[in-house]
Length: 177
Ligand SMILES: [Zn+2]
Image (cartoon, rainbow, N blue to C red; front, top):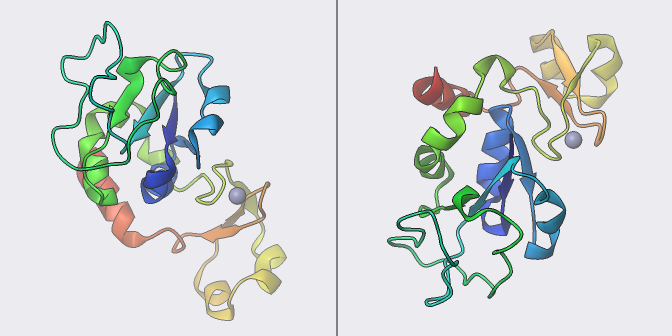
């Protein structure tokens, strides 16, 4: 399953990647189209619908956000390219609360053994790399403190056990452990 976060949900996208979930971050709605050719995704957005522009025959009893003021969803940009029951309106503007809002949706796809195996910056699955090969790219104290490293094959960002936030790891364990 793939998760798509719109431009207002950058931090949520980062957290979903920490959880090991395949998460695309789009900066504008035009970037959404290539991802909408299958049923293989959820779309998270903080934009609310323009009143009177609700999708026809929505299977969801209440697709409108109940509170919060997001940006307006451009008319007809969404309907027809993504299934309405896969569009999830996020209410909170805080990432941790946003995860609580969607925890029942993402729970079936969360495997904590796969947490911290994906690049936070670009979503690419990480590859292991030998400690000796990262020495020149990381702070000296990190080199001495950690033994296991991985690298993003795409953007070459280097990760180690302490590079994903411990706070996030505890939070994930609390909700999904
Ligand atoms: Zn990367």
